[in-house]
Length: 368
Image (cartoon, rainbow, N blue to C red):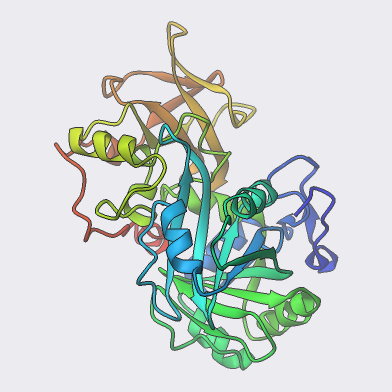
């Protein structure tokens, strides 16, 4: 969506929008009056996240899966009806240009992506059609996410399908759109005119509205990167968790594959995504995009997502040089920072087998 988008959920009680019109989540609620309580709702109950600013693209036609398979990093030719996965579009040098969720349903492949990259992805796909029997278009579906241990109960109480879905599957919604389960989260893609009513129904069934602050704070410990926030124009899949969730290492040729395969075989990407614990006594948080430096001013990384976590306090994702010695004192935009101990473990000598899956979910974080 454009930055002028304004979600109808901003009219809900206590909703506070981001004060930055250029922020990635401009147009949806930053919080609903209690960002800490909203995070805890995802731990103890069910949090409802407004993701309606994200873009959704529909690809139809008999060639859609084989065509998308040639353009992306994921093996899509055998994606079954009701299947869910992730994929990337890479540059010729293997740098990440687009990240998308992929849902196959009723002979249509739905791609959901960041609001700031949806139009660019649409234009790229339309440019690559050539003689393939496919049609590519934006669709006006509004995404909401449900996260928490009582999500199944909330869906059942609301009279909505999805309670019986297993991870990585999707089903149609009666009024249009679809519902899917990804790890421990359930996403609903709704006809946009129904967004406010369905959200109100879910809230009446026990879901608590939660803003982008809570969503981002929970995403950081899970090491789930966000395109354009935690990545830059040099990011390759091997540096982030997308190598496990959005890349198939044994599929046929696609743009950028040589870089992915070479770095995977060497087992040593130049950088890695880590979580930083920030000095809680500082009077400010680092800015996204600011440098991570050593005490002597040497730049060793870049700050990504930054947030106050309900248990860990101020934290951030950062892309740092893999060669950085463990225990090096760091400054994130001038704020004292330390790499999370779990990220200091010695790297494996080679990349993961293709059967590996990304197990670092929001559930893992709740169990910390």
